[in-house]
Image (cartoon, rainbow, N blue to C red):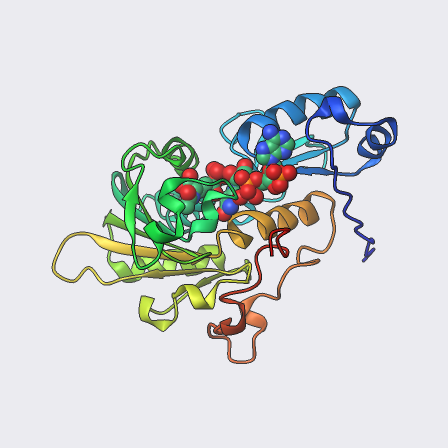
Length: 307
Ligand SMILES: NC(=O)C1=CN([C@@H]2O[C@H](COP(=O)(O)OP(=O)(O)OC[C@H]3O[C@@H](n4cnc5c(N)ncnc54)[C@H](OP(=O)(O)O)[C@@H]3O)[C@@H](O)[C@H]2O)C=CC1
Ligand SMILES: CC(=O)N[C@@H](CCC(=O)OP(=O)(O)O)C(=O)O
């Protein structure tokens, strides 16, 4: 297989109007331009890139994630981006974890699509580099609190891509950690919990970056996913209620954003799917989750000008 030399080229211009002639030419010649920007600048840059004649755009923002014209880049659920697609929308982090754990169950009509409650917990890096009072060290450290309850902008994205007329009740909660996301969905099954698990095992059999664990206690913790492209999924017991918990953990910065973007890019360009990605869990000697202990607190930011 052809192994290209991927040479990232990072645009320094703050807005399309700031581009010099060389940058415009470079952008026109790129196979793919990836936009890791908030919604508004991503929309502005998309328009400018289309005008410039850029070949393909991979957008990490939520600007066009529900656009029917656009491929939604979650390969294990929606396949590889078609080679002739011009634009791919990379999913949000909460949608990635929620969809991976629930969509195969809705598709197979194994759960009631309108009786779903989702609790999503996330590290603070999910909020990006912007400064906000609730992210202040003194507010967040030693603390954890719900935010945007019932009004999170990921609700429409998740419902849209769950399909089957699904509606969700969605609560998000901030954790006093840098990265990692754990999403727990309580669902009303039409079959036993073991059949839910079997359906997930079956769906992900050919997808090495999604692992369905025997049970949640087997290693669903964030320390097992941070620094990796792996999504870990588990189905809990029904215990004493009719609801069954379905859990998923991912690294919001990797599987929920950057490594997912790379995975989409590889598939889109017909490259080896794992090019540049951490190896899948199945390739670990034990076949069980590793603790990415040394990666739980990786350096996140370059040295600041202030120190
Ligand atoms: N963080 C996460 O866990 C996830 C993020 N996403 C999405 O991916 C995208 C990037 O995320 P993240 O890196 O966290 O976002 P940030 O908010 O940290 O912003 C990323 C970059 O965008 C640049 N930027 C901000 N405003 C402008 C502007 N007006 N014009 C040009 N550049 C601008 C900033 O550049 P500068 O440094 O020069 O200010 C910054 O480095 C976002 O759309 C986000 O919603 C998706 C899933 C998960
Ligand atoms: C902790 C935190 O604030 N998380 C962000 C997740 C945003 C994200 O990563 O997804 P998008 O690409 O859709 O912006 C939030 O809840 O809005």
